[in-house]
Image (cartoon, rainbow, N blue to C red; front, side, top):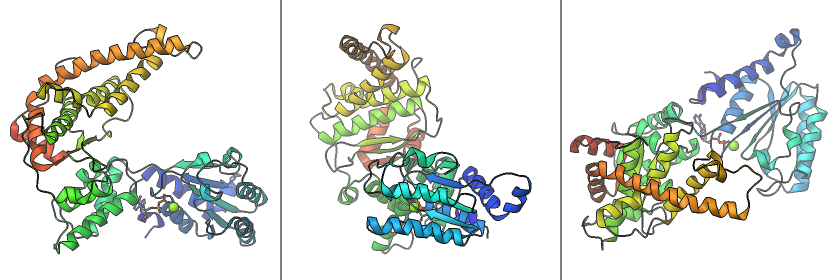
Length: 438
Ligand SMILES: Nc1ncnc2c1ncn2[C@@H]1O[C@H](COP(=O)(O)OP(=O)(O)O)[C@@H](O)[C@H]1O
Ligand SMILES: [Mg+2]
């Protein structure tokens, strides 16, 4: 088995690591060509994305002895440990020094560029120059590290590891699912959509938590329902007791019914999102993340990464969709929309300041951000928002049957997944319609 086989997905990163491992293992072949081996590699990214796993694979594939340095001692002793680690690595060269979670070497999460630990690491790296010691490090936040440490010649290669996306996420989930007794109805693609942007460690935790629920119920297999509850609880922080609750009777035509308002609000976000980007909604919940009143709607962004006119305006229409739906359905003002409005307002203000969508006179040229200008920009943003809100209502009116079908489904189940939305669309025969060029 290849050392890199444990890493699922991440083909591009793996290729780069394999190449480095090859240089470390077969240094002679490269020396003959007169090329210098890279001296150091820094892997950085959110916690749980696989930095330590990838480092272990690289070390194994390099065939070199590694000297690991992780902060688990008070400061004074730790500086000494850093020095000792490099000293031993130098004596045993060719070797690897592995500085795991290097951004934790100095205290706290803040920037400490002058911290003794970093100064020590830097001088140690310089002291092993030309001694065939490869320095491998991981960090969650590079902003905590001094710039001088990151310059080429110290860490020649810097690779950012992102949370798994698309096919990578599907493959990792399929791998975790394979190891457990999951029922056939658990679809890795849907799980990946619901967990978009989450680290491998979070994926692992949620899948395991689903298993715990199944075990507690003495169920023979883990089902999609267990997974859903685990995801809503562990990722979205929804209290478990809410999730086992029988769906409350809700009168969807009663504006005094708080749950009905929440349901139409979320259905509004979801209907606009589905109208503009069919298949993008991953989760609609009539439960809020903090146990308070309200719900939330998530959608996946994997469809296209770059910002387009459609994605920017789409985001604004979707934000306004909750407010538009409650107004259209109940004819009342929605008191739960202030966050949505803030978000939409910020996006519009950015468009005005950065993209001059309302004229150059309000564009953020950098030199004329006078108070007057800022005030004018805010006023214009409010007017523009008004126009976009009218368009949101037009989109919603054209998709009225979709809105009602989603609201009905949400009232019944409390939570809808991408699969539920697809089923609702199919059963009710509704299709999304775009009434205008957006
Ligand atoms: N690409 C991957 N394939 C399979 N498992 C992974 C992958 N990335 C991370 N993991 C698993 O996720 C967990 C967290 O990974 P870890 O390397 O400790 O993350 P980090 O060092 O970035 O905090 C580990 O159990 C690890 O095995
Ligand atoms: Mg780690």
